[in-house]
Amino acid sequence: MTDSAAPTGSAKAAVLNEVDTPLQIRDDVTVAAPQEGEVRIKMVASGVCHSDLSVQNGTIPLATPLVLGHEGAGIVSEVGPGVADREVGDHVVLSWVPQCGECYFCQRDQGFLCEKNAAVSLAGMLDGTKRFSTPDGELGQMAYCGTFASEAIVPSISTVKIPKDVSLNAAALIGCGVLTGVGAAINTADIHEGDAVAVIGCGGVGLNVIQGARIAGAGTIIAVDMFDSKLELAREFGATDVVNASDGDPVAKVQELTGGRGADVSFEVIGLGPTIDQAINMARTGGEVVLVGVPRLDVMMNLNAAFTFLYTAKTIKGCWYGSANVDRDVPKMIEWYQKGELKLDELISREISVDEVNEAFEAMGSGEVARSVIVH
Ligand SMILES: [Zn+2]
Ligand SMILES: [Zn+2]
Image 1: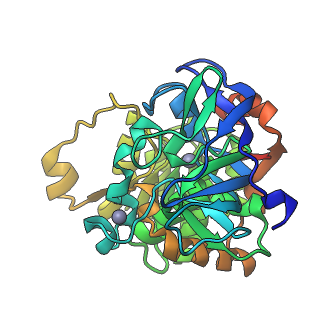
Image 2: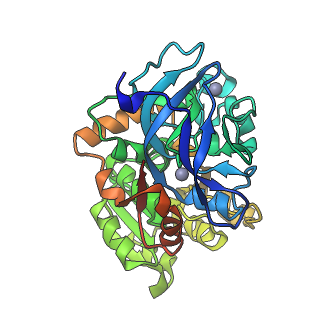
Image 3: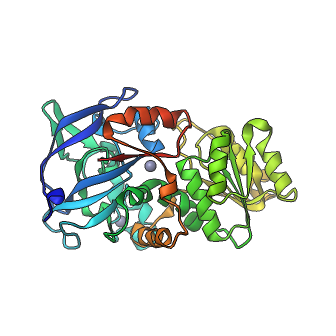
């Protein structure tokens, strides 16, 4: 056992005490021992994802107080009872959906819907109980992860083992943004060789949809965003054409770029009503629309049944966690990364300490960065 993998039982963490308040950095967080089926993780890196911001502002409702962070990678430092397939020193990517491999959904290759995820809104462990505490009381953890802490207890079925020669800073990003974005393109959507694809929203997840579409063989990849800086980045990730939505109607632009037909597959990666409408309208007759962005709970869709579904034969698909089977997809993505086919390092706009997490939220809220990565 190396020093870095030794169990300590105390952690520094970024805590959300209540919705719409800045995160509080605490260094007095006690981490209880792992229980049945759990492991202790020495967290090495955590991406700051838009969904963390969505918990902070209440778009995603979770019980507070809690430690945010759900996109991370680290080293197993202690193994709880009943865990046979993880050992101290293992490098792991955290998954924000535990995948049991045995439930109705896991048995049907829909591990992203695993029944073990049922207690997620309570922000504790699988049984709802908590492992983090401070002198002020217990703390929850986001999505059974809590990657904004220097160490955490997580269910072993929320971890995927990876080779030790892979950068944990890069691998951390696979846990959410990459699995979601690349997964949307390679799992959820049905992209054929040479297809024309449109992607609305080129943040951390959108860039991954773009590189997933490239890997899936799309011929034309149209990136849509309102920031030129993001559109530039989109080109680096595989966009063949870019549309700045502030310059005019993006639906008309996409039609113009696709011989008047519209995209074979369109992706909405923001979660707003108007951009969801655009995604539906820029898909061609018989085309596919994939909804990836997380909308507020009050966003409704008002669709014309005849012209959206029947006469135009469009398919609209919801995409949860990139329709991923993490045990299959994480190793595949590591392999693509090692071969240079999947960009991970390029997604990292800046590496920060956990003390700077509130600034990272502000940068993300203003649309400045692809990903800030906390290095613990
Ligand atoms: Zn399951
Ligand atoms: Zn995320």
